Amino acid sequence: MRIKILMIGIFILTMLLVGCGDEEKNSDKETEKNSTKTEEVAKIPSVPTDDVIVDDNFSNLQLSEVNKPVFDRHTIWERQEAGLPMELPPITEYTQGKVAYLTFDDGPDDKVTPIILDILKNYGIKATFYVCGNMVETYPNVLRRIYEEGHAIGNHSYNHVYKELYPSTDNFLKQISYTDEIIKEVIGVRPLIIRTPGGRAGMWTPDYEPLMTACGYVEHDWNVSSEDATSKKPNPQEIIQLIDQQTNKELKDGAAIILMHSTAQKANTAAALPGIIKVLVDKGYNFGVVTPMTPQPW
Image 1 (cartoon, helix red, strand yellow):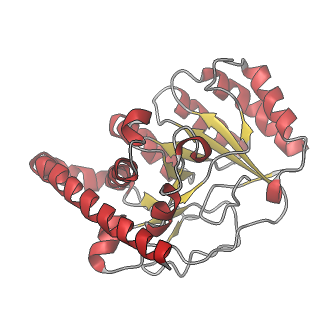
Image 2: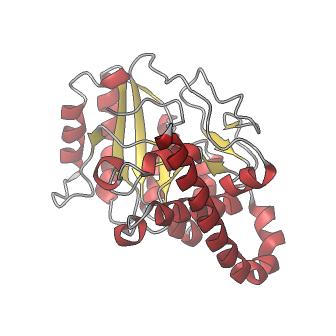
């Protein structure tokens, strides 16, 4: 009970600190935003047919399909102000059959991400893009395309800079919530899913997960890696082989959550993607997008 009370106290304190910080930041930018507000609203795309927009109470969050992206019309601060639930209700994870989740971090960019989107469109496959706020600011039209073509979008922090993200939960939440606002300005909704830069296992201390849960975020790391962001710098065939090897074993809940990246330096990843898809299809995998009901990789 004492631990629970302490966590609630930490959460409330963090909310107050972050709320004040964001209010100052937003007020500084208000004049600039107002001048382009009409133009930005006009650019917000309509909701793709297969997307699920959660209702105020998250009552439509339990899904039976793995290829429907999930978004929220409210940011966490809008939910707080309106007195709406912030923490998600209990969710049953999807564990039916073998599902491959193609995930791409660090984008969007205007070179490799469009190539990846072209390939996915050609194969009729939906993927998940964990985007950074600063990249969305630079390439908003690419994010719109990701959204319009029915892919899932996750929050991958604002700038991916470890020394700015991990001094405290306060720093981390500020970047996540600010990136939500940036995403919502572009597509009209924000994600419920996040991915921790560097991975939760290596970066989070025990106080991160309770706070993220209290704010309604679901974090997913990965259990299959392309190693395209390592010093190995694998070529396309090596990337295919790495994913082939890692999916030879039985994975938890049949879920292959595959880590890849979609930035200008990852042309090898795009080149490997058709081969990756073939390997997975040959092994009997279906394809899904990450949502709150996606199983954890471990």
